[in-house]
Image (tube, rainbow, N blue to C red):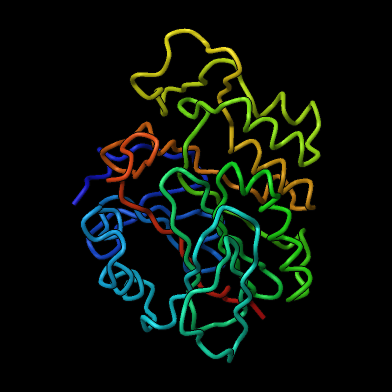
Length: 285
């Protein structure tokens, strides 16, 4: 069991909890609305030997207090496809292909997995609808934050002003070096100079909480950038109408913390995965 003083400290919008004897991260604002959590590498899913096995998902379902077949998963493909789970829907035999899940089903828990990409959890305090989304750089270029908000509006009548959003641990600009091709994808998607200037840096951006990954180039490489996916998420949600003070980013870099968080960039193929999961909001009447 990881002790609280050995875990990296998120900003004040998040806190560590113990779930089944293992650490998980929760968002304080979202905690008031919906059962949710972000797992760590201490969970079965975070161990490479069980990362894709049934018992890892069964364990997560147990901790979310649902039956295993009520854990709504998708085949993530690094795009902005949406899967809709409505109350009383039949359970499909195979997970659909998508990176965004939205639902109003009170007996289901939505889940996405990540090992550097941004996991997003969203709760609507008015309608009770929820969403889980997975966004790497390709997903962010495809507009995952905006598409998720629009899908909640379209399918469940959500209003952006009623949404609370939590972005869990993901790779930060302290470590995430990308090529010029990544920047060109954002340009081709219609993002403008001011956005690109905020999201792409010529040098790594370490902080006291998130040191840079060892082995980064000692001097900036031509046509390479350090991508700030946290800023891209905040800006994308705000552009979709979500108030900035209702957007919460944990600001924990997965690559910076090998003892607690899974990172494909740091560990390669053996890296485990972390889950972000949420159940329908408890609407107050």
